[in-house]
Image (cartoon, rainbow, N blue to C red):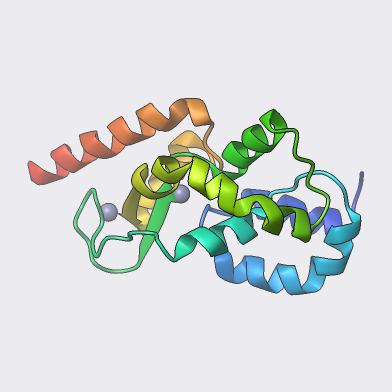
Length: 161
Ligand SMILES: [Zn+2]
Ligand SMILES: [Zn+2]
């Protein structure tokens, strides 16, 4: 371990909020070849799943909680990284390269349609940030129900104003 640039970039990625695809794209260009040589699942390859699934994402035109129509994010209650990690482990799929991901992502998406497309909320920047400050940058899968209840609670509170 230590301060290798590649490691640093992976660590940076882990600290990113869940939907920062622009930054991931830049990092992809820089690291495609080094990644392919690297073994094991890092967060970064999840981009390839998101790219594929994104076409069907149903982002709302307003924040679920406050109705703000400004800058909106789509928040997944289920961390795609964790879902993919569990799924590939259960299926005994080893991910060593981008091709490994491309080879199995459609199956993964088909197996997780509700997590990817239904268990999501469109949130404004403020509420998205707030949610992650409570449940962490990569919320544990065990907090899915809590995150959903938190959104509902704030929505009701907001309507009361
Ligand atoms: Zn909001
Ligand atoms: Zn999020």
